[in-house]
Length: 146
Image: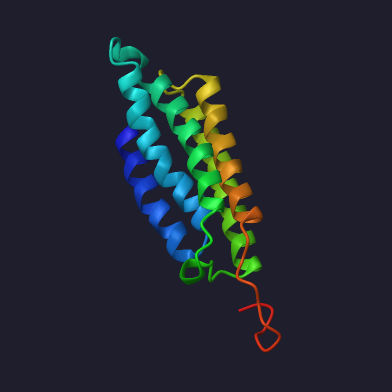
């Protein structure tokens, strides 16, 4: 399950950046690094890897996501419209909650209720990043929504 999460996070992070949700994309990519660092934090006991990885991923998601909000260079201003970011936020939030429910019903041994809750909260934070990310300022000659 960790390998599937790892590759989905890599692909999803780059996809979010390309779609214009750069703060969320940077946060998701950062969570991969946080999971790896969290795993090394529990290196003495391999049974604790999943817990340390999920906490490390959550911490890195928040830190990198907030850093991604400051990504304001003119050539990298978000090309996404507000409606696109809202759609991405809704899809991410629903997918995160659905995955937490699926994990709960699969009754995976090493996924405690706390880790299931982290999945839902992480998804909600990614959705939040999409909603608060500043979009490119439109000039009067540009349409409000593309």
